[in-house]
Length: 70
Image (cartoon, rainbow, N blue to C red):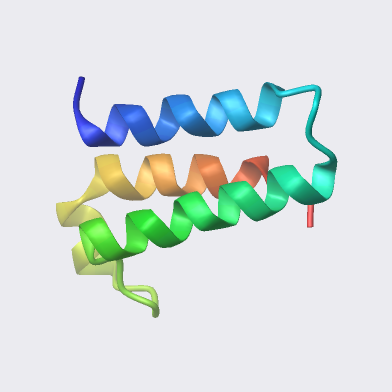
């Protein structure tokens, strides 16, 4: 299993975990996104060329972001 798949599976697990408050879920998802930013060198400012070149990464990153309720 590749790293990107692991990130997504962990996000799904966090989002579905009934033992976590929404605040805890949002915090853990944000930490997951920060780890993705470091590993995949996701630019802080939107970069359309980077997004085209890394569509699979940015897709998962946005799905995780959408799981947050903040």
